Amino acid sequence: MNIPRSIVRRRRFIESGSVLALGAVSSALAARKLFNLPASEAVPVPRMAVREAALDPPHPGPPVEEPTAEPSATPPTGRLLESEDEYADFISSLELRHISPHEIIDPHRGMVNGVANSLPPREMWEKLAPTLRVADEIRERLGRPLCRVTSAYRCPDYNAVIPGAVRRSYHTRNQALDLVYFCTTRRAYKVAVRLRKEGFFRGGIGLYPTFIHIDTRGYAATWHRV
Ligand SMILES: [Zn+2]
Image (cartoon, rainbow, N blue to C red; front, side):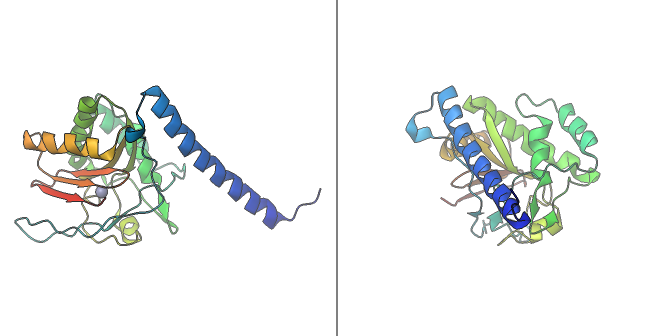
């Protein structure tokens, strides 16, 4: 049968979209089964666009703008990244108990409106270490695995094309992570707040419908966007 190329392309697109949607639902169901989660702790399925309202927590020092939106579910494009192996080695060297290098690296493959993200420049690598340790400790205390990292470093060009994002986000400094754990976001958020109270870190904690944001900016900032 001779099918016009445009229809074939569209069909492929629809099929790949269905596979992605089915994948999200089936992994959520599988996780619920695996961890025997009650309905109230349904595994969050990241949405394509989660709005992040403007953040302006009071703090000392020069005003620092925060992102107003997050590219929460940009599908990884699968492309290889420059210095990927070296960055993986660096993350391995931190000896995290629960978080693997590929989980951290994958969000850097994101692309929005044709603008590609990248790994952070080498001089910024070390900046993520304290935030990674917080993410790892949250995982330890939750007793539930990390589902995915929706955002880590965002290069300035990539950050700039995210709707509502503003300059100088802690993601552009490689100090922030957006995290989805296999539990409610509120539960993960509470663990993060407890850790900060205990002095484990000083930084920002944001609660969103499908993920939590943490950063190690050096002073406390807290916000809810649910
Ligand atoms: Zn964030």
